Structures are given as structure tokens and as C-alpha cells.
Length: 227
Image 1: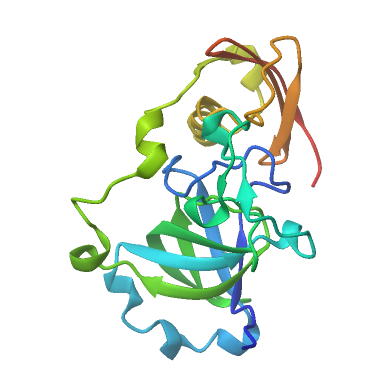
Image 2: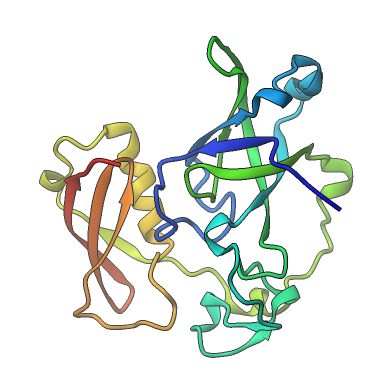
């Protein structure tokens, strides 16, 4: 079987560090799906405007060529306990495929790329390849009695975020709340718990640096960078 990419997604994450671990965790994270020339036929998305959400099958492009392991260390288990890869959403998989449920905000006709899809809740790195798009069907895809395995035992995990308003001078106001929600999800590798360590990641052309002590995250700097 040969599959080819039908589109690429544009997001505010030039690198994978900092990206929420699941789609929809940060609901206002925006993305734009741009179809490859071959798939810019408007007939291919006829009727899609009637759906509020879509399933996106995409590729963990940074992991291509990396060795597959049957077990992985889920972040929310502290990174120390192993689970089977098929019992997790780990990006290190035999075929490096991701599955995300995204909110379809609107479909826009552009001069350069034809119709593009504006989405929310994205958990993908900028320019990630997309292999298929399917509509989300609430009557079949939403299962009220579904159970969450070991994830259900963990419960909700969020950090309290402290950021001096002066650090956000020059940072787009419409992105500030989104940034705080990203940080509240704790972008750190689960196996690192060093309150003196400074972490950093790129978001919307800015480098964000922070430290974490217990369950409080403090932003140290927000500096403009060039992609």
C-alpha cells in the first residue's frame, strides 16, 4: 500500500517541543490545512462545510526512520512505566501516523492555494504532512460509555501559570491566553522534574522560557525569534 500526502498543516509550532500531547487540549490553538495542488479540486470538500469537526490522519514527520519499540513510556505516567505502544498515543509508532480530532472553524477560498481549512485544537508541528481527512460523526464517534484505561486513573493534570505582564509586551494579545493554556498542560518531558532547570520552546515566532516548581510554572522570558 502506498499513501501520499494530500495536504500540509500550518501552525505556530516550528518544533515539536511544547505542542499539546492531544488534540483539543488547547481548544483555541489555530491551524490552517493547505491542500497539495493535486487535491485542490473543490469537489473533494463538497459538503464538508456542514460538519463542525474533522478527523485528520497525519504523519509524525520528525520520527521517520527511527526504530520502533513495542513498549513506550507514557508522559502522564511519569515517563518511568512502560505500556504497549498500541495502548498509547505515542508518536513513536510502526508507521508514524497520528490521528487528531479538530474543530473546523471555516473553509476559505484563497488565490494561491484554493480552498484551505481553518481549524482549532491542533496538536501538530508546522508543515506536518496530512494523509486523509474525514468528517467527525457525533452519532457514531461519540461513545458515552467508553472507558479510559490507565489514563482514567491519572485524572486531570494542570499547572498554575505565572507570567509577568511586562514579559508579554510585544507578544500578540490574541495569543497570550493560548500560550498560558499551552503552559498549563506542562510541556516538559515527564521524566524530568528539576525545579532549577530552565525549559524553552518556540511558539508564534517567540522563544518561551520557563521553570517549574511543584505544580507552579513561572515564565522567565518571552523573546521574539525568526523562524
